[in-house]
Length: 374
Ligand code: PMP
Image (cartoon, rainbow, N blue to C red):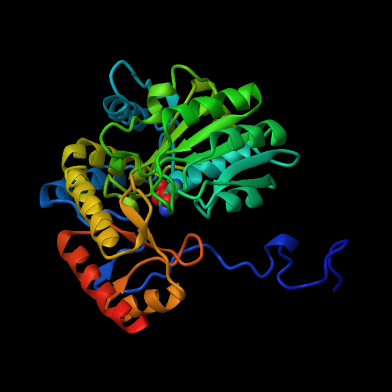
């Protein structure tokens, strides 16, 4: 059989640009200390588990019916949670909220609605490696600018890139993955103004709840910019990675636009019910955030005292280096039962912040490994 015009034949008849590409994903290994995908190490209490189970049972009773396509109750609950986190004077209304199966799906939907053939998405590397995949999968042209040496945004260069490329979507994680770098409000303002009505600016706050004191959320800027979108997730601070619930706050017109591309009933009745039950337990589920921020700051201090280069972090992970052979260090840690992530610029490794016991295990293992690997 011959392939399509310009493509060699192959089976299965995959899009040419997808051939040979490995699916995205960190290794899922069953080891004692898992510090590789930025999860919250603390599971729910028995009371919370019982409440979630009851909510799932109630949803189960009507599983013969499709779920609420507009997930009205969940949108209201998310709006009220966000209003509490947005800072004084900012209220988020339910029609400003949209949700999907993880913030990955939220951002894919944003690219489906606002990207596409003939359009460009921009971000600044090193950054989250799924962004170019959303662009590829939606046939959106992908342009990555560079971050400065300290992983902050060079605002003049970023503004120039936006003026030159005229992107329809700008993806700005704050804090950034894998560096942990948060954006000052000035950066968001500058890029919202540079993008104008031709582009949307997506501030990905997947790790927003871990930001250091005094670092504001971009939610505060929503009243000023109708092209601003702030995404969040229940996967990280909220201790709900298994739930698959991500969401955004934006102008209601942006939420309405996404409704055109979303699959009908994309949020199952079980997801909606369980997310609402988890939101009722927000104080408990978020209850370890302060402790994790403390562990993070202690980890940064320890790594620096040991002589490593460490990126400032507003997230629940830390990027550190530099290693001549980072893979050997990663493997050495794994051999001692500590799984971290081989990601980011050459020579750097990323470790998630776990419990105090897990961090002690990481420190011991790192010292042993580097004593061997130099
Ligand atoms: N944004 C960033 C910066 C992330 O690191 C992640 C998860 N690794 C996500 C979004 C997506 O997370 P989820 O789909 O679980 O909400």
